[in-house]
Length: 209
Image (tube, rainbow, N blue to C red; front, side, top):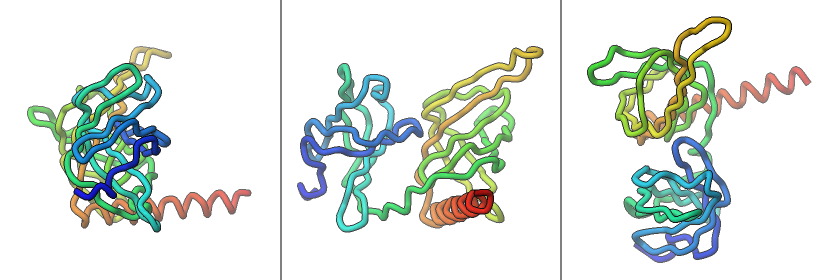
């Protein structure tokens, strides 16, 4: 791996962890095998989790690489790189959508039907009702994006549940974030859908102004 592919010590990178994107994460040290970063304690990823790092690649692209959190210490995390960084265009990481149906399939459980809060070609945040799912679970997802259907295997990175209490005790509402690495054909569908969705939202905002 060429040293030019590695972020410089003291530089800033973007880190995606558990579906949340943290810009401006400082690189403490970086080698071909690992990167140590410093960030607020509240944003330090848990050991063993998978994160995605991105940083600028002239003229208009970004380097992207996945990494596993090998260890944490206070506000630092040591990230073991999964391979060589790849150059992609910034436009590949659009995120948007909301309200689209999504089906989650898990071994030993009936299919669960939910709806998307937002989606990108690397992660989805979705809501389900009365399901049991935890970080680390592997699930199969099928989402309806306009006239297209995308299917992929994903790993749950975050799951939070809240039961309705008012006015009466009700169902369990579950918000789940999952990461995946779809083939380019599926990624193109997601990217095209999200960019079209964003354009539609901007048009609506301009018409209502």
